[in-house]
Image: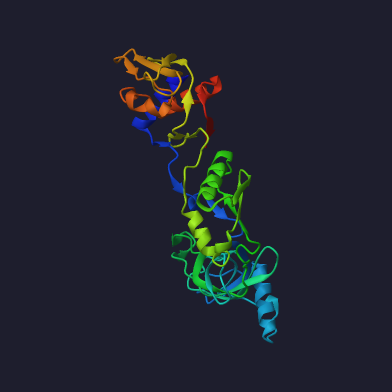
Length: 367
């Protein structure tokens, strides 16, 4: 199985997009974030007016009712049956409220038609309250819609570019309410890992404790609680910034991701294989693991150890035999298999067979 895996990886290297991912030194900032520092989604319903006959038709009842209600608020009574306006479109407005924004700050909004309008290009969004999931209004949107597309003509004689029924308004919403909680209010902050992992959480905890004393504790694989040192209580932002800049080597599970549509395989450098024998077409690969003894130099400290070597031999009927160096990692085998060819489909089949046989120590994910 190990031989099959080596063949697959070599083939991918030659004929497909193959990527090997190994853990490297990174910042805590790139793999964890402070809990509570998050964005919030906002949504509202509004009307876009001023369209050149490309708005909703009379069959769009929500636009008719909304227009009648809007005019009634301004003291104008209109019979819905008499309203015939195709320069108005009913739209949904969405936005993301970033953390720590203040009242009066502006945010971008996205506007999308919810009726049968042909285009909202050049229209103006009327004042639209934007609500969070709890129903409270946090921003109000209004302004000219930019779609980046167009529709010319009608019916079969129509040309269209991009999607003119959706657009955006840069800085189109004004924040009316702040979602802000004082950072480190209780003298403590928590880090949330992007990917929960026991080893990574332990390494982050050790890195923080090495820099600031015994202030961090891993509550679980996805959260680390940190007590803010007294000399940082008045400047929590600087403390968080210094923690985020600490170097760490995240741990990753052995995983192979296969995209059958593109023939791409992405795998970690810590993927290993067991002793196995694989036959694919005219290619024969043998992977053999041997054990040898390692002895320290005379009068030196240390103990003897057993060293596991993996000898790999690949033979193809139509080509010369390929002998691979002793190794226990697939990533070390790829370079020596450049002379062996296989199609992406063959490589994927070999990987699946190796996983089924239990010869590859990794999670195989097919997307």
